[in-house]
Image 1 (cartoon, rainbow, N blue to C red):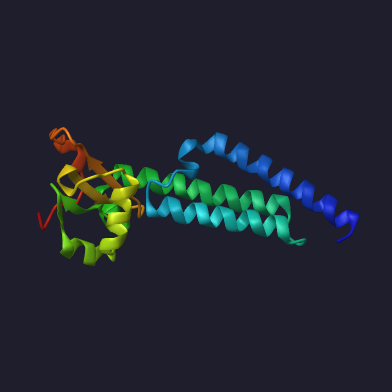
Image 2: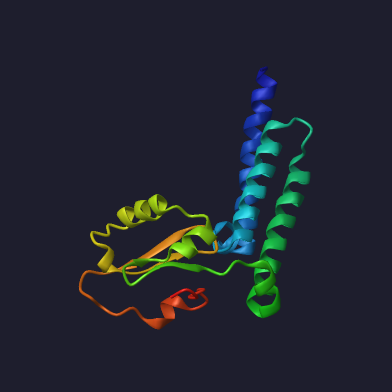
Length: 170
């Protein structure tokens, strides 16, 4: 690598990161939130474009900025459509799945979600669950994350916590 190549690399990194900061300020905090599988895919696409711009000599900053702005604008538009149109929401988003409820593992749901019991138990440990009976609900979110709602005081869970969650098999 020559000095000129190193300078180009440094300038590319500084330039594209400055561009991504500006784009993020324009489109808002949702830009890198992982609230849906579409958000996750957008984040991966942004990372791929960033890497291409930095590592390829024939990739211009302008071309990269246009690609990034297009990806993030489409993500913003898509999330708007999902919020405003139930048909689009139902077609393009996964519904969160209840995989454990009131201390009982829902094995059919585990299988449907392709989650192993060992994976579930690891998430329970991560959430500092001491006893299955403390678990009110475990939800396999549309993003692939697993949310654990638990308490040892036998408190009831607000029904709103299961809004939009597929509670069949309970």
